Each structure stands twice: as structure tokens, then as C-alpha cells.
Image 1: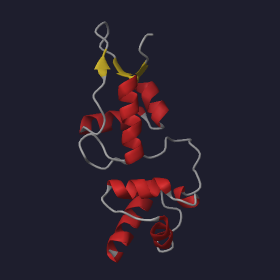
Image 2: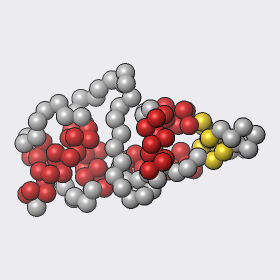
Image 3: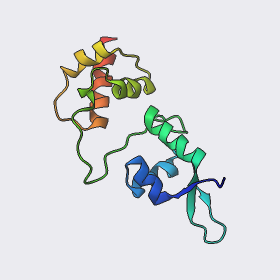
Length: 135
């Protein structure tokens, strides 16, 4: 079976971000450097690299150990606040990647103290600061 590959543009689309943001994350060392096609020097990613990038987004910790934040691509539907789910799994994982262990109850209490309508990176930051105050 042949190995599957995707272009940088396809990977950006798969990850739900712009190609420009993906280039910046690669340059910062948060994402892996792409392989290069020797015939035309175009960047591409193999299946293992795609999985690594997806894991980085899930944990919000880059290859370089720094936090990774990504905004929605223009035109993507704004989801109801990530905290709409009963367990707040994404928020808890993002906070854990920043070194703050929190339960769903703690996140729920902290959400009541932060402003409504924050984008995800600002929401995570506000929750981080609120939970650190109470620690």
C-alpha cells in the first residue's frame, strides 16, 4: 500500500486554519517541518506528520513545548462556546497543557466569572488566570 501525503494547503484545511498560520507555527517550531518533493521542492506531509499535527492541536502544546493557539479560519461557523458541553473536555485539556489541573466543576465556576463571548484563546487565558487566583 502506498503511503498517503497531503500538501501544506491541504493540511491547513484539514486542521481548520489558514496556510499563513500553519507556516508561522512551522517557523516557530510548534509544528514539524514539511518534507520536500525533490522534483519541485514543494512541501508535503506524510500520515505520521498529519497525526502529530492533530495531536499538537488537541493538546495545545507544540513540538517546542510552547502553547499553541489557533483562530478559526474566516468563514468557519462560530461554535457555541466550547464550554457548552457538560464535561468541558477541550477547556480542561487546554488548561492542563498550561499546567493547570481543573475539574469540570472548577471550570464551570470559573466560567461564571469571565466575560461572555470571548474567542477560545482569550477564554482559555481568562480561565487560566481565574483558576490560578484560586489555587
